[in-house]
Image 1 (cartoon, rainbow, N blue to C red):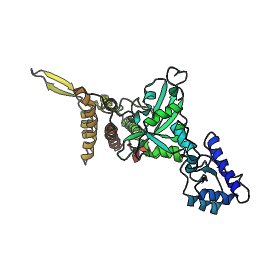
Image 2: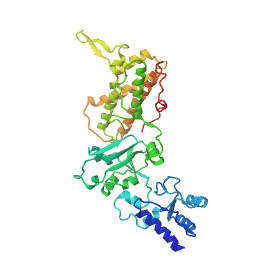
Image 3: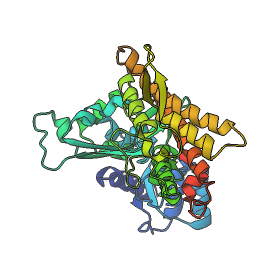
Image 4: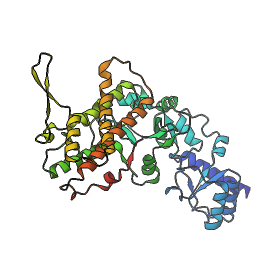
Length: 416
């Protein structure tokens, strides 16, 4: 019996380390008399784990940590053997499975780390690729990927850059909502050894949690639960323009973007520096108050102020777009409760105020996670402004027949 136990243990070890993908050993061929009891003993002794495929649909990879020993044994008693056997991390370390491995994330897999466990990294970890035009660095608010462009050569760089053709990652957050890059161990293992070593330099300690929709789409395999606040902002603008057409007016906003298409730079800060935050604030104001169409207000409110200069001569000065909108709303939709309108225009002006700050003084650039929070506050203000404005226009009798999409009406957005 001891020989058979050793045979099962060796087969599970060899299969895991030699499969090329750290696969488990299927149990279907373990049909010798007494195999079930021997496997139970090996599990009870902390030598093997049984992954059944009920926590992740593919039992041939160890996606997550194995269940507690008593749970594994109880399931065998109730439903028999099913799934795949894996050497435990303790057994792998005892056999020196990763002892000579220099690549840190390959070493982690050789020592039994779950393939869909993740590591968190400083946002600067992938800076080189973001700045190199030979790579496509595509990012939304949930995940991203790096893809070497077709026809490009990276021969003048070190081998570690040559080895990166495709890499996927997501985002994670700690308790104070500081943002980090997140990558699964399995994907990190696919990187060349030198790049794994470079990534490890940027690995962060502490408790990080994956963005909820990165977890849903990558781990559960489900649809996203909410939409990005950046997409919601642009979609609200499009809905407002549809309302304008229905009431016989020119579009209130001069620009629109295709469905879930964004202008370059309109999204979360990948590199939270003062410069990138200022650039974002400028872009956001260009999409908000600067994008308001003066033609929309013609015939309803006076577009100009009549002033006099210091010599008493008459001067005509164009009104600002926020003031025009404020006067138009007051004339066309006088609110019973002024507070929501006051907040809406405060949101418009808060974006404009931040956009104007760099114009008044020269500032040094700096890297600071505080800009993640400041950007979050700014986009929440901008989204709140267009969301409220859309609800105001929705009260017009000619717009009530238009069905606002449920995702806009519910306002289920991610602000992370």
